[in-house]
Image 1 (cartoon, rainbow, N blue to C red):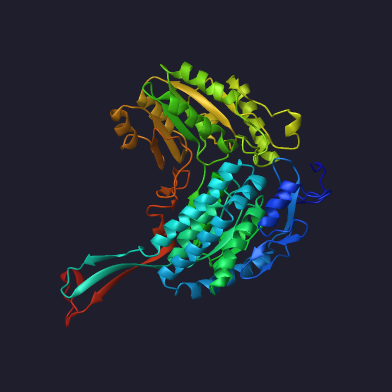
Image 2 (cartoon, rainbow, N blue to C red):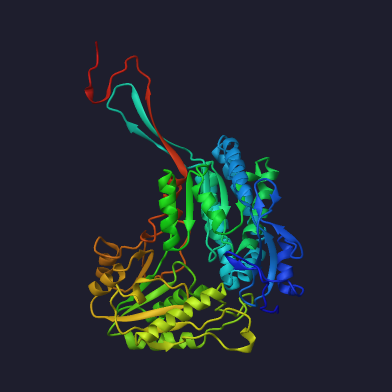
Length: 537
């Protein structure tokens, strides 16, 4: 394990750590099998060629604190060059027939599948989620490629009846342009995959600005995709990459070269991104805060509900945008539910996320631990009961990592306007409140600014109808007897209100990645005007 000492110089978005010892065997094996040489300074820009002359940053393992590799990020001029080359690649790629684009996606799918386990391990190594979740994240990318292959032959417009004889009206989807994807640390592969698959199927080029703390995941993923593109004679800049921090992200967002910006991150930054893109009349997809709630009715099957809440709150160390943050328990089952849930919490297996038996890995960064501790302090200052957890782990075998105890808290107030309830904390903290009637729980569910995922546990069809109807949950994901976390790719993914209203992945999400053309065709011998207008001389 490497020491925690740091160099005197630090970047604006992370500390540059010295590689004072050789890399651990497990890390070296993963990186090597993904074509990454950890002993070399890695180029963090790809637009048909690999380079990088910007700031040097370190990728740090959240489990051990060891430096995995160093990456030379994009300079300001390289960001602009990458945007220009991505634009040039789009001009060529938009003319590739859609089924051919689907074939390229199929090959990307096969290339990802061949490296699935190593790339999943890379996610665990650099981000911190347990291995089965890391592999599952890569599987999401594989699945959305499958979806994109089919979509490439089914991106249909429609024919609209015309009121004029001898006329037809068509609505035609055409390629949009350049899609900029700014992804977050918690899903360093899958979120890019959701966007890339739909973007390529639509005939666009994509430029990716990943989280500055997960550069290796983005480099490894781009290497896999770039080889497929190059083997097919497609410009590599169809899937460009620029690593970097705030400045790189701001440059991409501000660029008129990008018709669409897909941003995943905090509500605070998302608001800025949305305003900046709107100011230049660009399109934007925002995937922001979650702050998700599960509601447990007295007729719920607790043998299903308790494990689902446990995974929703503890899985990924509470670092999913769909993690369960709020738990509303009916008064008749509150005590028995919490007793069962506490037993799960007491047996959670914490440790190295690459070890099969581990269920709880670290928080992604040291600063995330500070946010966790501040949230716990706020709960204590407001006399909340800490039912379990509430501090960092002190075990010797976890030293050097960002490990915190999963926490269940019972605040004094259930007012959803209170900061404890209305502000999302990206950590494994579950706040609990007790309710009397479903209507009260729905009001609590809907009274926070965010609206991503929600979950109701019941066997009563009347409750189900109310929950999924106009007076029910106002979230984008409205589940019944399914937890808040773990969406599939087939439906559109996204949330409402301050979550941003964006939709990615399945459903009709692809329609955001195209430019719609309304085309009226006259195949008659006359040219009548619409609405019966007579403009004859």
